[in-house]
Image (cartoon, rainbow, N blue to C red; front, side, top):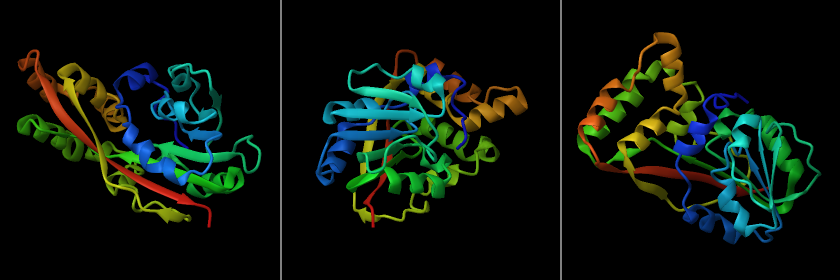
Length: 244
């Protein structure tokens, strides 16, 4: 598993979108017990904090200690630095295992081996992701889409293809449960938008190679729109299943 997000972990925690409760509400009816959940590659806890009120205990793991340090301290959550593909967990421990916006970085075979080892026989694996944001402001949306598909095209890691395909192309050797189409929508300031775009891994690669700010055009646009908020949505996609 790659670690692309230890650098700038505070910005990541502040700028990345929070998942709506609707995601968990779609998953929980298929989870027969709510004792122990594992949030794998939890980062700074965006999905962990959603799980915490619904489980007796949540274990959140990540390979980045810097990311976990930014996560909220919750009474029933323990944070541990562990690889997704090799953990110290007991067999058949978890009622639910979740991975939010991270499985595309994994060694699928190694992680799924851990899922089969650690998930209870009636437990559930839920893989969650979100795609490229769409803005209601047509001009700004075009600038963002051009940034994503053109300016940064050669700077995305190969694993980004799985996000672009809404996780439909990842291997998923489980009995799959059909999930509803969901999205998460916000009204962001120009600063919030710029901060979010700054967390893109391709943008970091671009800056390192070119020593230039690829956000210059978008930055200039939002600065001209003083005190304006921008409505935007991210499409959410999920793969949810049980052991075969």
